[in-house]
Each structure stands twice: as structure tokens, then as C-alpha cells.
Length: 525
Image (cartoon, rainbow, N blue to C red; front, side, top):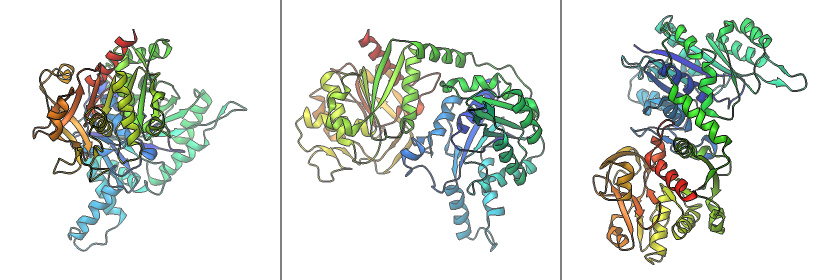
């Protein structure tokens, strides 16, 4: 039977609760325990299918087709393991399940209420991760204590502790401790009030993680310990750091995982995270390096930061660290590229990112044209790869009007079409790699499994036509649908309908990104 750690947030949102939860899970795993994770999101979307990348960042897809926001990607990369659709639960899923059961007569005529029916459904979702093969499950509760939306989750985890008994659950509360700049004094009252809100619900946190821009003084820790009813050693500080990967190490310096394991009645084993430390050292060295590789990430979701392409950024940066190269990624609007492709001239490499919708598509086409004609290393993913294929059809094969059926149902040359009868393809599927191709040398295997998230595919009808001018479909689905292509005369010009970034990890990047960085580094020498 698994033991459970529940991570809640207080005072304000955006404290990095997901990173803290992922760090704790990674640290516990480094001590030899098996760990799983789940995020409970209080919004009523059933999944992340229609969530705007501007609001929640990228949509991350698991092997079994589950969708979640970018936090799910952090979980996988920190834990270095694949999760499932059970690792992201929304209020939409919870309420849909309850209503469906009620419509089917599953409650024997009872009045369906938040307590017990919604809270029971939340607990059932938690129990799905309960396994003899999993020692500890870390559960993050989205939102902030006091939000009306997450109250059912807090009530559910309160009940869960009572049902499981002492020593089988622990509560970690993450709060913000502001500093008054004029006096330099930490203010603990917001945290005290947040903990009181939890206590009013019936939850007493075992550990409080204090987010701050400055280290806590002993007076602040003593005050928090006294008024929040938490032992002094269970007040953990999490000071803002420029290097995200340092967070687990900073927390572990304060025995974070050992304290959590003690609360669960588990022995403290020796921690083994030398590989993580090495990665952090490389990241710090890269940050100081004057020799840097520059990459343009061309996409449409660039106006409000980089989170819409978080997995790609992590994959490129990790590939650089593993090659001892510092990589700077710049977000470039595809709409700007459409107006002036020359803005890409100063970069060592180009990545044309995934997405949906016609806005910015022609800019991605222009980016692919610039990379192909100037022999700039270029990796195209999802819609970016579709744009690269459209560009090749128009400019190399002179197929005027070539396009995707998604945007032009009457195009005379549908080089991108809806070939899969399943419609929206989500999750991990096998791809057969064409022998003798550049892609086969990169993967070093005849068959790979990659995660997909798309509706439209490359059109196999144009395979032989494109081959005459050097574009090779280098991977296919078992049913013969093309899934990746390359241009043999370019240094690196590869497009994949699938999303390789979803399977890249912090300690072992995806081979496509590793090769992409390797080619750029060789070219820049």
C-alpha cells in the first residue's frame, strides 16, 4: 500500500508549487523509493485539449494519451519516468464522472452533493495511484488555499488522512514570505493566515516550504514554527534561484526528503543524485560561458513568455549541457518571420514549433524556406513540420497552391491531409524508421515509440514525387502513414509529425535534440 504526500499552496499563486512537488518526488526517489505523482487542477475543463497556451503554457501528453499542462512535463523530467492519464485530474473530470454516474442511476436515488459524492470521487482518483509497486505518491493540489474552487480537494485530502490512519499521509504547505524592502524584514503574517485557513478545514501541515527572494532569518522561522504549530526543522526555505535545476539540491540541504519520509514512518536511506549534481554543475558552467549557440524557436505563442514551448526549451538546453555547450533560445514570432525571414540570419539553428490553427502558419512556411535555402540546421515539429512540407511542395516541386487540408479543404495538392481514421491522435505510438536514412543513424533502432498530438498527417501519395528532389519520408506508422522526413542534401533538416520533446529528460535528452545541437556545435567551430 502506498503512502501519500499532499502538497498545497497558500498566499499567492505562481510560487513554483509544481517544481517543489517534483523536487520532493525526485529526492525521495533518489533514496531508493518508488514514486508516482498526480496534479489536481480545480478548473472545469475536462482536460487540456482546448486550454490556451497563453494561460497554462504547453499541453503535455503522456504515453497513454492523457493531457495536462506543463507541470506534468516537469514531473516526468524531474522524476525521469513516464506518468499516465491518472496523473492529471481536473474538476471537469471529477464532476463529469459524478454526473454520468447519477444519470445512470448509480447513486440509488440519493441527492448528489459535494460531500460526500464529489469528495469521494476525488479520493477514488487518488486511490488509482495506490499500488504495491509504489512506495510514495506525491499529490499536488492546484490553486491557493481560500480559493472556492479547490475547497472540495482540501476536504477530500482531510478525509483521506482519517481513512488511511496515522503515518500514511503527510501535508506540505508552500507559502510566500514577503520582505518589506525598507526594513529588510520578512513578514510571516500571510503564511500564518494561510495555515489558519488550512487548520479551519481540519488540515495541519507537517512541513511548511517558505518561498522568498531572500534567506529567512531565525526570527522569522521561530515565529512561523510557534504560530503555525510546526517544528522548527520542518520550516523549509526555498529561495529564488535562476537555475531551476538547483531547487531540489537547495531543499535537500535542509533535509527536506528525510523529514517527509520520517512523517510517513519510512527509513531515511542514503540519497544518490550525483548525476543531478553533475547536470547542475554543467548548467552553472554554461551560464558563465562566453561561447554560446543561438537557436531561434519560431512559433505563434511567444507573446507572453516561453512556457508554451517548455518541453522544447528543456530538451534543447539539456542537449547543450550533455554536449558541454551553452545554448541560448530566442522565441521568434512566426508572424514576424512571415514579414521578414531575414530576422533568422543571426542564429546557429532554427526550431519551428508545434501548434494549431492557421494564424502564423505562413510564417512557419517562410522559416522553413529560409532554413532550407540557407542550409541552417532546422528541426520542425508538428505543425512546424507540416509547414516545412508545404514549403517544399510549393517552392521545390512547384505545386502551386499546395497546403494542408486543415486550412484549405479545396487545395489542389493536399500534402497534409487527415489520413488517420481515429481523428485526433494522442499518446505514444510505434514508428518504423527507414533503413539507411539520417534518422535511422540518429535513433540507432529500426522502431521507436514517440508521442503524438495532432489531427492531420503527411500525405503518403506524394512520397515518391518528393523523393525525386531529395526529400525522404524517414519514418512511417505501422499502417504506412509518413511520420518524419528529412532532406538529404542539408546538414540537418528534419520534420516530425510527432513531438519528440515530450520524451526528453533532464539527464538524457532525446536523440533528435542531441544531434541538432551536435550539428550546430560542429558548424560553429
